[in-house]
Length: 331
Picture 1 (spheres, rainbow, N blue to C red):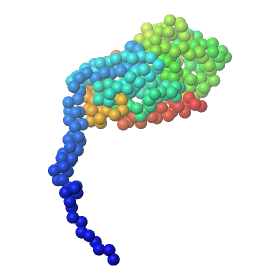
Picture 2 (tube, helix red, strand yellow):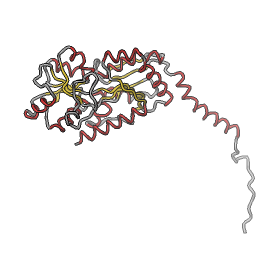
Picture 3 (cartoon, helix red, strand yellow):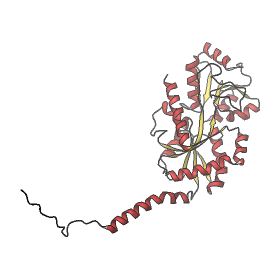
Picture 4 (cartoon, rainbow, N blue to C red):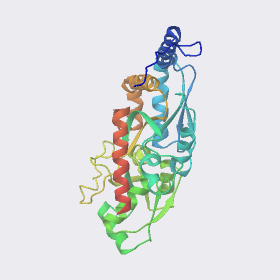
């Protein structure tokens, strides 16, 4: 039988140190309090709002309208910075690579988020690579023609295009964008085939149409509003679930019997990793701007179709549209 030798601590044996335990606890508490304290001081400088498309389009319109008003509630200006190209991807990558400190925002939710990734490989994940803050609007996508076009209805266009594959052209905001995806899905569901002419934004699409350079322009009702009111273009149909308040006479593709549904969402997202207290503080400030009569008046003037969602619900809506377009494009 072995004899148990009692343990006697030596000078080399580590002992529990109460003061170090207290110091560790105090450090942890300080770290937990640091984020809320940082949020209290946020923002301490101007916030950059990146738009991945050219000035004058729907994304640019909502960015400038909300930024002008939001400054009243953030205490700092929101500065719009247009970085067009690659169907919004240049702006998206710029924000993705930025420091997640709450001072760089992207106006996202459209082509760069839910459509382009199904057409090309990207150096980032458009869903998990960003943290949604707030959705501001949902933009319908319409099929626009010149006022003197021989096509009086969408069914006229489809019938003619079926007889003449590749004869007619259409303009979009770039390869793989929502405008492009809308027409690709339309071609597959209706049996037509048209020639694609990509541009850098909705404003350029419509300029090409008005100038007679293309037969159809894929654009949003708010982007086309001035030309519609001026009697230069008209809308044959839209891809949304419901008719647009701006184009009440244009039927949806589903009304016409085609299973086509694509909406263009727009809202603010941060690069992934921005602390939640900062995201919440910006959300609350922008929501106040969203409810401000000044912004409502600007939105009405610009014919923006407002549709609010908080960050969590915006993320779910983006994932749903991303999955839907992916399934449609693959079919």
